[in-house]
Length: 195
Length: 184
Image (tube, rainbow over all chains, first blue to last red; front, top):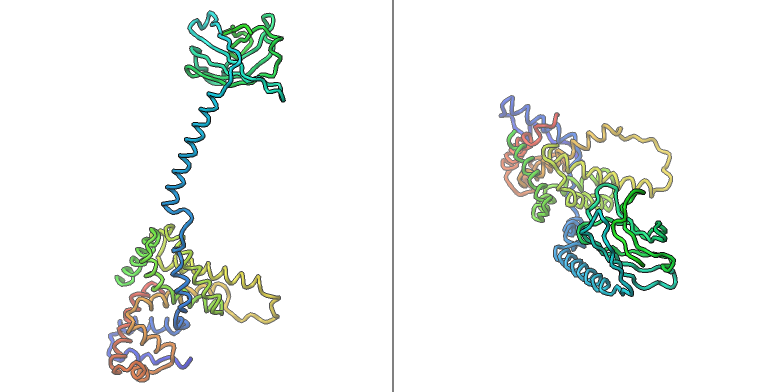
């Protein structure tokens, strides 16, 4: 690089003191820094032009398509679930009798097929008229023998008419009743049915 | 100074528009800052290819993160400078990691603080130059960094000497406004 220019040659000598001071400051700055890049490579411009133009993975159209697909799948799963529900193959049904504390309650136990490989019975319990339990309280479905609780089949809570799927791995012939109680030793039998 | 403030607002608005995915604003921002960014990368990396990579990454980062820019936190120029420095430092770090063992030579460069100050000052000057009308910018760059006299510049540009002097003086005065906040 050649010599720096003469300040007076650049700005002339007809400046006011304020103007001269201001331009001298700029002159000093310009002398203190390296020169700018002579030019920007065209390849850089080409590369920068590509920024943001690549098709993003989640375009608006794709988002809408994904939402539609998700809705379709949800509907299919819902329909499949409903179809499988209908497919519950009740082999036996037991109507439950309400106890004194819940005279308007009703219940029914449907006994499905037994899985031979595991020995589990599929059961479906439909109850109505029991109050919803708050907090950590819940109902228990028992198998009873000689008036004593003998085997728990599962716990549940209700909200109006409620259907609960349960399994039991017991030999049902060894029991003589189904009983629903609230959790706790002092709970009366709320609903019961003979096996 | 009104000129400098107007420029800062203009840069801010451009970045805000970029943050909303405005391609046109992005192109304007590139035109305005391509030389300062590439120049800074070239000076600090000393290699055209790496400088180009760093400059590209700078503008990619601007495109990605412009929406995070908050005008109240600082000037647009300072934000862009920080983005560019980050990209350049990343490139420099990669260079160091890829390099073989460094030769045993005394490092005569300025310390980190001095380098940062010099880098910021250069950035401000170069960014301000980009805001000058082309005819004024050209005569100033030729005067300060090509070594040509005013007469030689007039000849080179094929314009009267008086025109060169007028453009130079007008350009310097305009730069004074743009660089008002830079302490000499």
